[in-house]
Length: 105
Length: 105
DNA sequence: CTGTCTGTTCCAAAAATCTCGAACAATTGG
DNA sequence: CCAATTGTTCGAGATTTTTGGAACAGACAG
Image 1 (cartoon, chains in turn cyan, purple, brown, yellow):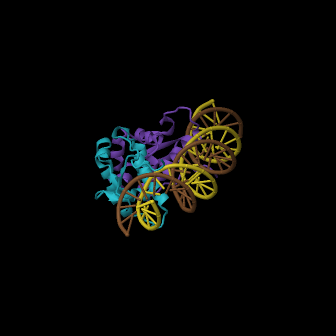
Image 2 (cartoon, chains in turn yellow, purple, orange, green):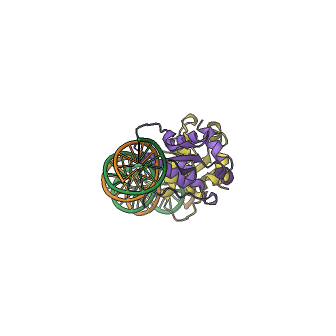
Image 3 (tube, rainbow over the protein chains, first blue to last red):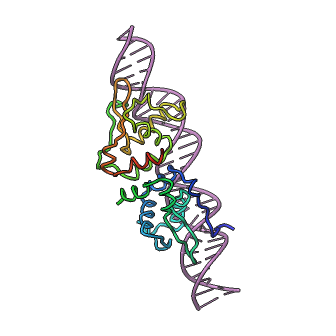
């Protein structure tokens, strides 16, 4: 009973600015958010700058983003589908996501 | 030769998004930025949520903001004048500061 | 010059975060 | 059912960040 298929996600109202800023303050995590900007992605298709970081590390990066409410991480076949929580973020912190992603180019 | 009057500040071109987001991801530091939004403030006039944190801790919070390029910290009489680096931040990361401060209300 | 006030630096301890191997769970294919 | 694939969780060690006391330095008043 260790790897639940459904992972916990904070609700829109629970999102905090601090957690979002912290999650995106890491270059690797910011790059993940950038990749998801164009649409959902399978985790396997979401690449890190360093291709040989262990999967446990990659999973942890996703966990920080998920717990901050930046991304949604849902089961998808034998893998996982990652989605940017654009609508929730826009509703809670208007313009923030776009501004950050723009600043990151 | 321990407490130089002039502290080092990163130049505009050296500002990084990650450092700025990290600096502002802390509630206490974000609150400091908010106070400076209305104009420069003497350090003594810049209050923390907890009024009895040691001055060394307060100084460290300022250091993180200064090294990220969020604030300028200049000698002013026997104290220090804190200024939000609004123009530099706007030039480097258009809209970012306003969006974050708005999101923080 | 002396004492006071303000705030930085140094240092070490505490706390949080990151990293990654190993074990585990769920899905899919044969 | 069995094996391969994908990705999460756990645990321990490494690294970073935070915290606060003590020492220090500049500015100012008397």
